[in-house]
Image (cartoon, rainbow, N blue to C red; front, side):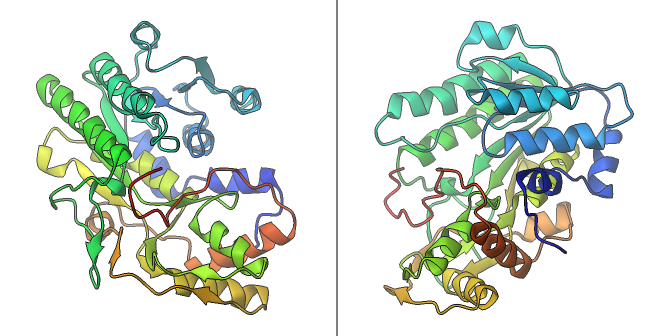
Length: 340
């Protein structure tokens, strides 16, 4: 599979629905609403939904403040209904159109330590408005593996049934977001799935891209955070849309870890170095704990053919060497004190 060489090619790959995604969306009735559609993942997820529903009269609606006006314009050109709104404003949320299928992507991670009030406003207060507004709709609420805390190695990673152990205000606020949606949907009988995503990778950002930049720059790769989960964002997009069909009123089925198998940072770096044909050096030693997730439930509930890590590493090398645009949005996967 050839590497994407331009942003247009990259967006096409990230937004390409497979047969399972098309089948999942077309089996559901009604419009699809994506809240927080202006972030890293939102635009390509919206594009995928629009492509999956091509030829139908069903709307795909993208809601965000859209600080990047070009993203909004590009979505409108594809036939997406774009609405600019502050989701922390209850009046703005009340004015949004109804949709039976809702994906909640909004939230704040970076800057948490400097703006804890803003973090709780975006991650919890805004969730109250949306959960109440879309009572009765099926909802996929994006969350994070940070709600678990680190596990002692060796381990298969945290499972959906594990006790949550937030490390820092960001993780705590994400648990708050989950509890809000659980509370409101339980009371209203609305189908819900909590989509606990671990480290999606677009070539413009992500763990693999961050490691690849260090290898290509001749910098040592730190091993203190020795293990991670990574998933190609195109795969995460497909799984998110398919997850609408998994939303349930059964509380025991709500959370789902969404990521790839656990991999060592050393393995990622060596894979990158092999494709780049350059040496790689390391610093530090692999720690005894890591924030990783078990994906047994994912493979059972949403079986899929993931993009291989080998391919993702090769693509990252080509993208960086070709001068592809990089986003100033580090994953901070190395952070070990919960401060983002």
